[in-house]
Image (cartoon, chains in turn brown, cyan, blue):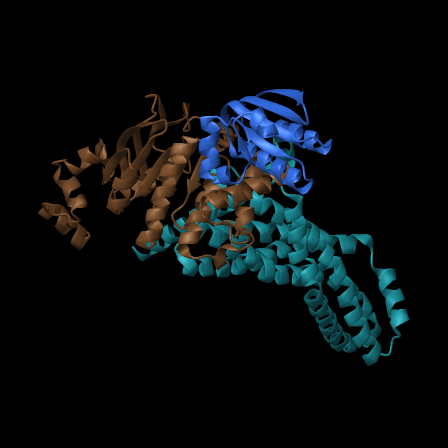
Length: 265
Length: 264
Length: 107
């Protein structure tokens, strides 16, 4: 693996709240250049929240998030604007702009950030669509695409600028196994050819084990474990094993707290 | 106890209202910021989007605006003649129609029409984009949603609404003239001459200025409601309805204040 | 990005070197299109290219398309490993004429 052990993502003591409720409880994490880091956890683990903060969509309560050496909690809007050119994001539902064709969706980041010639931009956007096996679909509207095609088009848009950092939210959610396996292959190919650093948030074990260099397991706003696929598989942490074996969690109950919740007292 | 509870509710409602007005104010300031500063930062407001919005909001609304305004003109003529008959001064109805149309009714009817047509569309469009994470997608690409979505609509509305109001002036005056000429027997030419004599630029400008303010209210309330949409299609429907009710209420309230200060 | 243009018998050799990215691919594009505009067969040497992004690739595609439509010979010469990876990702290695040297280009 071609890591030079220089973290391109460096999170320290990240604490976040949603209203009064604490969601992330002091998360620290390093992701190295060229690495595929999978962030795993059940629903309510805070993994989606974590991603939103990595993307700079919210301001954390405390802690720092460095992307490519810049702490995004300290950047002004112009610096953040510049940094965004080097980041690509593929959202869970694709989040394609429904009023634009697939091709225009992929072109949008290029038109926003570059002065490239129209011909170049169009060839680039079609190239990206070819990469995700959507060659020839650029004139269609997002509403005309199937779920798997939307995801692939969203990936094409995410890599339009050849970003150094690629974030991928739930690549396999809602897809059939074949399509989701294809997406996994694509993620691996992108890393190898373009040397991107990729962060994938998922709850799909198969997919996580297939693509991950390392896996971060989040649970209830805390990091349970960061390790290679092997290390996660062999972990003796009971919550990690629950997750791997799809066991429902079996928590000890605090009777007082439980009664308080039930009776709203 | 009950009184205290009521007072608390009133207090909370007031705080919410103030918060909301503050939020809409911030939206206005940020939109203006992008309109003015955007071009210097290589992040301009898209002119193409402004024209597209002007077509959708303005040009496409012209037929219905003309019909409504014509109807209002006829209605004013009927009521005016009926009232003036008491004093045997039916011919004076021309003055009443001319002033109330230009100063009041054109901008009001156009404002309500556009709030229903375009304010709601804005709330629905932005609300849908919030729910589909398209707003997040814009932000991670580095495109400020206010620059991209709100500023073009705000600019388009504030150009188009005054223009529609002037058009509506003509249609309403024409409606009034047609009915009056039939009922009282004033010729259209005489009616037109009377109208030109009583109308001052100030009267027309009062309507135009009101339309400008209504435009800003419609844009901010439409966009502001869109951005706070949550919870899927149902949530989008909720904010859409809310934006129409709020913007029509705001238009009527603003109109009342306007009229109070300008007519006294 | 550095470049050298050298006249060869029957063709022009454009040698690109270094990193080709958003900041300089428009320049590469102009160089390529200018040679084709003046009716030269064009060989683009990529042996010293350490990094090429998709805007660079797009410029090569546009050049090749123009050469094809004007019946001019066009090839990529001695493609570096880094560039080849990117070409392969887009399966363009099966599209561009690839040659190892100018001798092969002229053969």
